[in-house]
Amino acid sequence: MTDRRLLSLGLLGLAVLFVVSLFVGAGDLSLATILNGRFDGDALRLLLVSRIPRSAAALLAGASLAIAGLLMQMLSSNRFVEPSTVGTTEAAGLGMVVVTLLLPGVSVFAKMLVAAGFALLGTFVFIALIRRLRLRSGLLVPLVGLILAGIIQAMAHFIAYRADLLQSLGAWSSGDFSMVLKGRYELLWIGFVLCALALFAADRFTLAGLGREVSVNLGLAYERVVALGLIIVSLIAAVTVATVGAIPFVGLVVPNLVTLAMGDNGRRIVPFVAISGAGLVLGCDILGRILRYPYEIPVGVIMGVAGSVIFLALLARRRPAHG
Image (cartoon, rainbow, N blue to C red):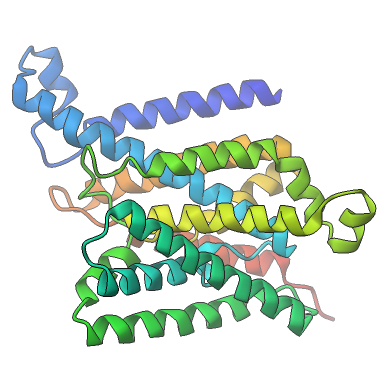
């Protein structure tokens, strides 16, 4: 099957999930409502103000987080890293706590920029650590990232506890689309623009993943490409945390599964990674609304359980054989 046909099928699947998402929830809005001619003003308001923005937010967040994970894996030359396992997401949360404490009256966009700065710093620290340690086993790289993420998260919790911001930190640490409304998710479109930029520069990121010496010999401005990739990852992490909270494992499992199926040609797989990430997050959000209807399970919880199982399966698959 050609890539164009696969993309068409993926987009069709996303469209089906999007339509399903519009009619799942505690509000009185269903396909039967429309077919029976009872589509009144309240139902229209629910559709335009809540359901469409929520579904769009899930698609945008999933696509951008999957692309961020792919970039992290390319730049670190390790398949087991993504923003939520190397400290990037936790650093963005720390930035949100700090800016809320020091400048509580600034706009959400300004908070996002500060969070992006913290996320960029956290990502640079991780990259510097793995280069300095020169780890021989690829399995140790995510372990270092998880330790760094734990340290940053502990700092964020300490500051939040002293400043009575634990409830806000909890919202930023757990992805949830239940509060998404029209006018409160539009920052996620920045992630869409960043995904387009990643597609444009995909060949350069693929070369950078071969290592500094190889990419420089091939004429690539290695440091600039790495810096661009880290900026994209940090902005995506900050936008997601500031808007809907952290959603774990999306950037880890989606690129790995797509790469296993299609290879690691960056330009070829970027669209498939974006579509798969969008579908996975939207599907988890729909599942979270169904499992305890009319109550909801946050998408971060659903994705955390599913992602951890897939992560362990990937680790077991890559484990070298003995004997």
